[in-house]
Image (tube, rainbow over all chains, first blue to last red; front, side):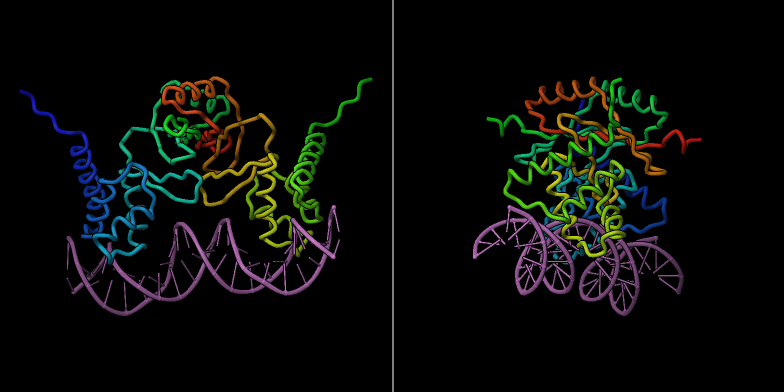
Length: 153
Length: 153
DNA sequence: TTTACTGCAAAATTTTTGCATTAAC
DNA sequence: GTTAATGCAAAAATTTTGCAGTAAA
């Protein structure tokens, strides 16, 4: 019998390693706070706002400062395990990022639900548009705002 | 001989009218400041930041307040002649909006140049994606970030 | 023991709000 | 005359920074 592991656990482990490697390679230090924040981030919704994360952290670690959370999230983004996103509601969010993977978002304007999607054809057309203007794309952002199935009902 | 008017002038005139109509219909008041700000907005780059607009205004009208600019831009958006956009650089911008028209953006990460484009096929694919998730799209945002032809050279 | 990290509080940014005064209707 | 708009300054809200003390390496 072939044993398979749940995706979640594996991914978490991978990201933890990736971040540790980043830290080591940059000559930075591995600290208790960074571990706590990483753990909390990885076990959170895929699009958590800074404030949400901070509040969640504080329930178990009342002495972690806001500044540390900001600084640590920036490190996550730099290391490639997270990505900063803005949905235009004044809340900066960080989403889980995976190497070479990109996805776009459907955002429900009623309940805030966020659905991720990927569409190869759209990506290709984006390349075409860019090429037509002599642009070289580094990254892109596609968000569809509307009413989700649940809220429509 | 058939006389045609430059597009710019016509559009400006149309938007001014549209805003006046909005103001009247809402029972609001037409003021000197709103006229000045509207004029300045319409004769500016298509994606002006609030600060840029404020500074531009102040050169000729040193006593217009920041609060008035913020409040007036929100009115422009409500009336449909402008749209708020964020390119993730911490600067809120307002772009000129035309009824039933939507365009997306190519943003040069080097020089900040913004190119507008429309792509019917992408829009259609977005509808398909949304439909597949039971979503009803209200609006969307597509931004391609990269290096423009000029900066590549 | 050296260097980076943390937590706090202060500062910087961006946007909103309260309110007395002014201007439009 | 009423009612809304303005301008200012104060308040919010979000993010960054300086620094003394602390904890990794």
